[in-house]
Amino acid sequence: MAFDRLFVNARLATMPESGGIGLIERGAVACRDGRIAYVGARDALPRAEDAAEIVDCGGGLITPGLIDCHTHLVYAGDRAREFERRLDGASYEEIAREGGGIVSTVRATRAADEATLVEQSLPRLDALIGEGVTTVEIKSGYGLDRANEIKQLRAARALGACRAVSVKTTFLGAHALPPEMRDRREAYVDALCEDMLSEIAREGLADAVDAFCEGIAFAPEEVARVFARARALGLPVKLHADQLSNLGGAALAASFGALSADHLEHTDEAGIREMAKSGTVAVLLPGAYYFLRDTTLPPVALFRRHGVPIAIATDCNPGSSPLTSPLLVMNMAATLFRLTVGESLAGMTREAARALGCLADRGTLAAGKRCDLAIWDVAEPASLVYRMGFNPLRRRIVGGAG
Image 1: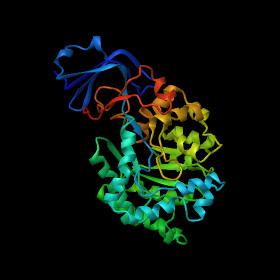
Image 2: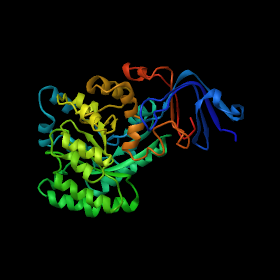
Image 3: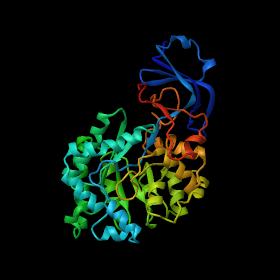
Image 4: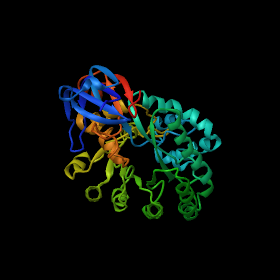
């Protein structure tokens, strides 16, 4: 049967689900109806001449399209002044307790309409796309009431309609207490569970539910209420866990079968064991670690020892990781967290797909999966990780097109 497109003259980094990079020399990828129909050596492909289009990749490298599995990409305004304050010695927690931090972005986001949010967020999305991203997760969490959280999620979905990219949306109403509910914590958690979550699930606006479990955010018992309601509504969960302290967030996430637990600088071995049992992915965010000048490294050796999959992401957000370069994230993961080249590349392909619950459909080069490809003008996977400020993307293919 004829192929729609055949990509040839390339090395393939297939990133197989069994692990490793899976290099294939003189490889070919065939596409039919937006899906991968063949991956392997060009010489082993029968009737290659039947392809409607043959694409010469110039001897470069083909990887799965990159996946950014943790972003807060939709927001209004910026927090450059807070960055100046941190340079003068103020901590992230101090700024948050004074009414800055997340709440300052909430004010700007509430003041913007959906069209404005889309307009301000598109340049950030375009930066990710420009470095090979084909799937991106986008969280809410800067509205903190029903109307504004819904507005953010709709803006995120609208971004996916504006560009050739797959958008996965996450409801993060449990991100911070809104100013008007500062002294009414229980009432806000009630509203999250009974009002916001119910409406968002009814409208089908979220693919997952997240929360920020931290001393400056939500306590484990509050997160547990939100997660119980999310699971009752059929929504998977993920968690900002153990970033600034160890409140047992990793174990809590695992107890709900979370897709991922993210940040994890202060996670202990007991929590990691629970993640291993539940299949919860560890999502490491080196941009936030770098930007906040953290000194506590996530326990990468323990994740490896217990077989916990490791993904990485930009954590694109205005306050702690204003970063839109997945290639720089891979370099940071290697230099700051000591991930290998294979782990860094897997972290933004295979394991990122696992963290979004879509590994069956993308994240590796395998027959039957979406034909999402990044074609690079380099031959070695290490070249994608070691260079900084260098973008060798030749072509990006989404669902077989591009």
